[in-house]
Image 1: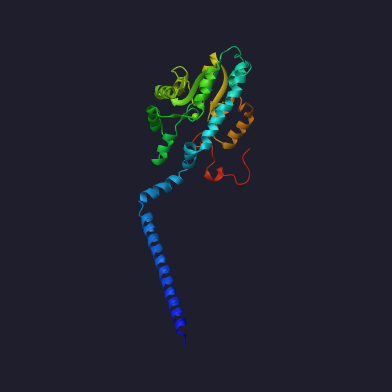
Image 2: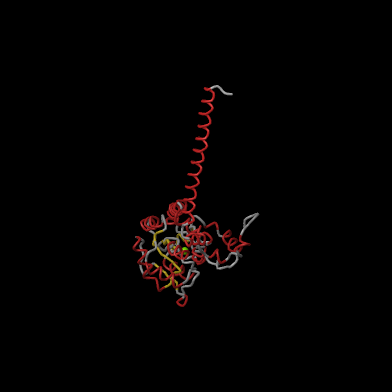
Amino acid sequence: MLRPSARVANFIFHFASLNFVSLKFASLAKGAAVGFFLAVLITARPLPTLGQTTDLLQDRRFDALTWVQNSAEYRMLTEQTFRLALHPLITALDDATITADEAQLTAGDFADKPPAIILDCDETVLDNSAYNARNILKKESYSTETWNAWCLEVQAEAIPGSLEFVTRAKALGADIFFITNRRDVVKNATVENLKKLGFPATAENVLTKNKELGRGDDKISRRAMVAKNHRIVMLIGDSMSDLCSGLNVTETIQRNQTGNQKFQQLGSRWIMLPNPVYGGWQQALPGDKHALKLKSKTK
Ligand SMILES: [Mg+2]
C-alpha cells in the first residue's frame, strides 16, 4: 500500500506518461498526414511531364547540349581557345613562310600574298544550340528542311570569344573568310546573321556549299579559292574537315590516326573548337557498344 504522497506522485507520473504517449502519437499522426499530403501532391504531377523528362534524359544529345548551353566550362573553353589563338596569329602574320593550308604549302606560291584567316561558321562562330534543343524536344533529327528554316530565322548567337577574336584579327591586318557547309539558299541569311552579331561578313567573304558549282562538302575547293589571292595564316573550326583534307573517312581509328599525323599544326595554324553535339566523329562511330572503351583509349 502506497502512502498518499506516493500515490499522488504515481498518479502525476502516470498522467504525464499518458500525455507524453498521446503527444508523441499526435506528432506521428501529424507527420504521417503531412507526408501523405506531400505524396498526393507529388504523385498528382501530370504524368506526361514526367514521361517527357524521362525521354529527354534518354536522348543521347541531351547531356551534350545542356553542357554547351549551360556550363561555365564550355564558355570558358571557347573563350580560352580564341584568346590563345591570338598569339600564333601574331607570329604567322609577320612570317611570310607560314601557311595553314596544306595545298597552299605544297603549291608554294604564297609568300607575297596578303594574310587571311578562314573560319567555319556553325559551332565555330555561330551557336545553333537552339535548333538542336528544338529537335530534342520534338524528338526529331537533323533535316535539311528544318535546318534551312532555322538558318533563315537569323537567330544564331555568337560562340563565346569568337567575335572578339575576329575583330582583333581584322585590326591586326588579316582578311576574314567564312567557309561553311550551309547551302547557297541560306547564304544571304547567313551573311545577315553574322553581320547582326558584328562579324565582318559580306557576300564575297562567306563561301557557302554548292556541289554542282564545285563547292563541295570537303571545303578543299573553297580553301583553294581563298588561297588564290591570300596567304592562309590560320584555319579555325569544330570539325577536322575545317582544317585539312583526307578526313572524309568512316572509321574512328582512321580519323584518329590522321589527326595524330597532323597534330604539329594544332594550336598554331589550326585551331579546333569543341562540339560534343554533332559532327563527323558520330558517323564514324562503330556503334554504341563498340564505341565504349573499357581498357585503353584509341591511339
Ligand atoms: Mg562547324
